[in-house]
Length: 181
Image (cartoon, rainbow, N blue to C red):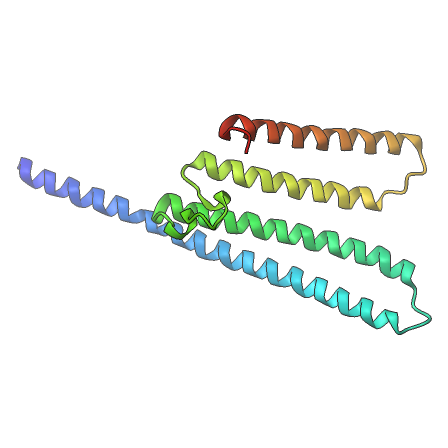
């Protein structure tokens, strides 16, 4: 009986270990989302560039209106690229943590950002990119505000201070973990 229960236990553990492959669904869909966002942002910036080129031959073009719209769309594209990066890092991290080590990521020609050895590594990398998304979102919002009131300027200054502090503490936290890198 003991031998039979040992076989059942080993079979159950093998099945339990194999269940980690369910993570592949999150990896694939995260990659698809990342590729979609990269493509959408690229198409948007390319279309914006083509519009700018067409405006150069139009003597009656309203560059002021185009400039405001272009800034808004470029900031949105940066936001999309950053979110795509989050999805890409998430997919790579999940794969590395649950499925298999990515040997090519440890090649010295690649950035260390692609090496994820623990959930803390994944959390740190995602947190930094998400902070950048929040900063871009803050910039996008601040870009739309009309500063006709001194209180709005004060709020902008406070927001900039908080962004600077967040960047400082993020950098200081990373320096303590990896010796200043």
